[in-house]
View (cartoon, rainbow, N blue to C red):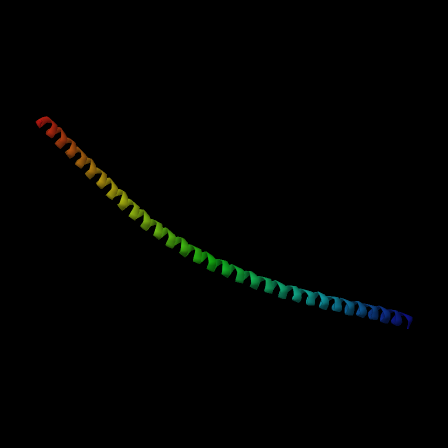
Length: 110
């Protein structure tokens, strides 16, 4: 009879321990669920930030491409103007040479 009481006490003690462990497990599980929800929210925010940054980058790439095209257009115009300037300089130098020759001829005929 005493042995049965001792066993009953031990079983009751183990049941209390099991109950306490189950309670502790529930608390840990609840904490993990809260942490998981928090991490999911954080991930959602970060994904939104990444999408925003990707949109900004795409816009910047488009702007950059447009500016590059404008600069290439300006370079073409600049090259055309340089060519026209060079042609004008050659023409002017030829005209100056002709005028010098005419002046020399007029001096020689005097």
